[in-house]
Image 1 (cartoon, one colour):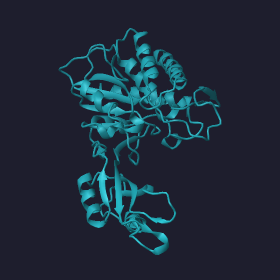
Image 2 (cartoon, rainbow, N blue to C red):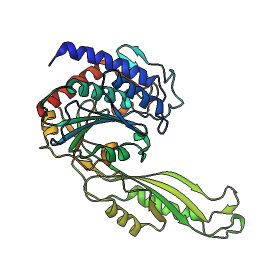
Image 3 (cartoon, helix red, strand yellow):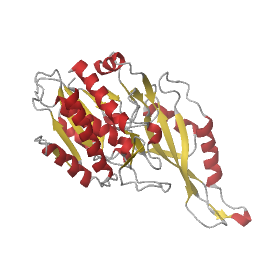
Image 4 (cartoon, helix red, strand yellow):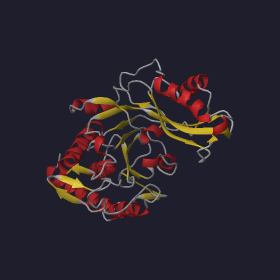
Length: 357
């Protein structure tokens, strides 16, 4: 490994992350950060491509006869929560921590993957093509992020998805299914005990969601989890028995069930009408004998099943979720990432890629 070149790239990565933090990039509003990333590549005489707010670049000696490895992370962020004590858009390094919105989720991952891409960019005779993709709308699972970008990239054979995992390997990931449910009753006057209260019907179904256990438990991902997260009625008057009660269920699915199987069980057990917003974010996994995982194991990386959903869910090819930072810091107030985590992440990404490229 060329450590002098690596040290230079690591410092550039920290500088790029500071610029990204200072540039607001809420989901669907990533125009400025997409321009920033595009400009970063152009300054290195690399000509990236852009679709909507997604930016990607191919290695110098891209060869269509070779398989393609995608390096992907996102440049959108959530909005800062009300408990921030710092300016979320002011990148500051204190005690080895780089503070700022998106520093941990997933700016550190993105600049680390960009750096690994630059390290290999102009090397000849690689076994894989490399594509670096900085995608949009990950935080909202939007259709104009990685999903639309993949349609532009051609055939991709495997991927590394940059999300904060402490540089351990998330080889499986829960699927996410959001359900809109409606319990229906009949309106009436509360004082006269008229009508059929939809809230009471909803409570019965919600109780089922909180107590039912799907029998198949994954070694990597554990059981299927269901939580009711939103509830509302169609009226605001205290003296009217509500005719309907709407609620939302967040269902996290392990790799042992399809969404269709889960829906069948739910519909057989509740009275409410239930509709899934989509079946897009399915559970995914990558085999332990895949070259990416084997390379990670050889570097002493552990593996686990991730409870959170990422753009990996929208990929139809094997993908390994792995990156610097800690998922527990994501979306937290005064978000930060350690500078050393980024430097270590860059070095480990390069070491991993060296084994397969």
